[in-house]
Amino acid sequence: MNVNFQTAAAGERNQVNGVPVAKPEDTILGKDDFLKLLIHQLQNQDPLDPMDDREFIAQMAQFSSLEQLTNMNANIQQFTQQQEHTSLVQLSGLIGKQVNWYRIIEDDNGFEERHYSENEVTAVRRNESGELQVQLDTGRWVDSRQLTEVALKSEPSEGDDE
Image 1 (cartoon, rainbow, N blue to C red):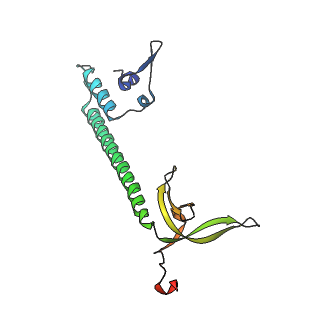
Image 2: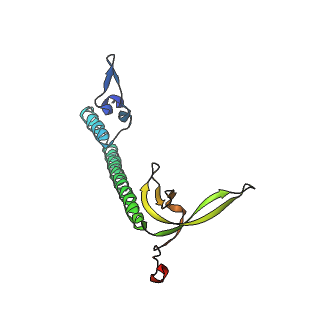
Image 3: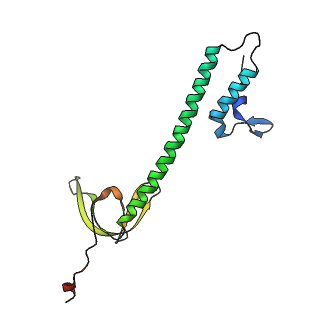
């Protein structure tokens, strides 16, 4: 039996000059497409020469594996999004605290050196690349991986006012 996978899996298509044109998302077969193909194959099989039981069981096992992998992928994506949100919320706990951080500067000989500074954190964000950053009291944004130490902001003691 011949099955036209393009036609069976593509679903609705746009047409240009009467010719069907596949949309980009049509090029990837999903679990619904595989199920449609299996049903199409069963409906169009030769009644005098039906599908072998072992072949049918193997196809069902593959379909079951595909569905489980699809569900696992969706769960991993959801977990990743939750972790990204949690990381940002946890980083917001640094607002108002003193942090030590470093930046790498190239010296006159071309060697990289770490220069350390201390500032107060005023804001946090996730940049366009998805990296977590903190804003310092100077207005500078620093990657959170450049932080080396966190401390409470030192309050002036009562004797300092005199």
